[in-house]
Length: 194
Image (cartoon, rainbow, N blue to C red; front, side):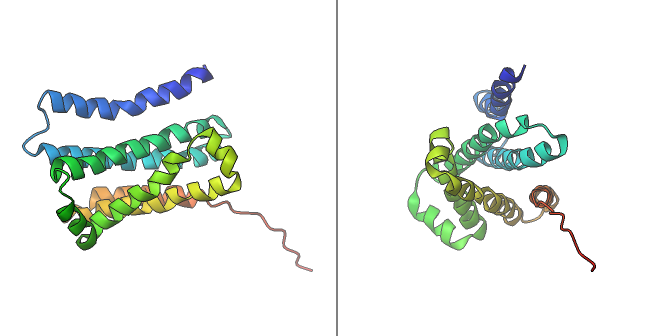
């Protein structure tokens, strides 16, 4: 049964991508197709960040180590959907016209922090293999803690992007903060009262 879990997680993780392809090919993206793809891929990036961050707390609460085996797959899908999100903005929205893109990065804080989050994801994706874990040893764990910063940047990107509707982006921020808080291990200390 266990051997089917990882492929199952992979297949389930591709469903949002297949769904957006279905909408594209059947022209079901609504009046603003580029905006729809951008928001769709951005939101799924945040969902996969939340799923990735939830693996360690789930292991802790359920006492099942299987959760950790899904973390790498989910983390790579964070990068996959974030890259689709970035390519939609750069390729479909701006047609690879770098001058206004760079202008946006400098002048718009939500673009700057979103781009920074993607840049931080890049080394995590590159070093996700078993070989890199072996080569980097203890440095690998330290490097992959960047996911905490990326999670905060991603939620801020969504909040700053939303000019009027803040509820949904705030829900993601709260979920991310709770998941980060759950990772803090409270150590029991013996106190001598004399």
